Image (cartoon, rainbow, N blue to C red; front, side):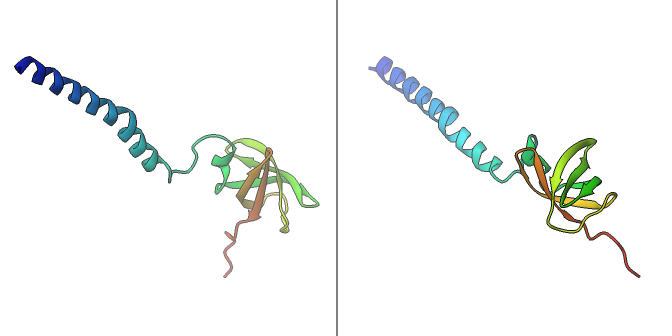
Length: 104
């Protein structure tokens, strides 16, 4: 009789551990990570600032972290301006001008 109880206890403990390891911990990890912004890929550029390398007719190139990217904007931008990246689609960034000019 004691052997059956011991075996049943071991089975329940192993089952509980497997549920914890394969269901509960992954769900908690996913819940914790859902609010983080992307660290890699094209989506990680959104929100960063860039410097305009060249610009003409609403399109041009910007420098972001040492790399040149195609960019587009409806706003008036000129080379040398600093811009903020608002979207990234098909290797083209959408940018808006930064209001970092100090007026006295």
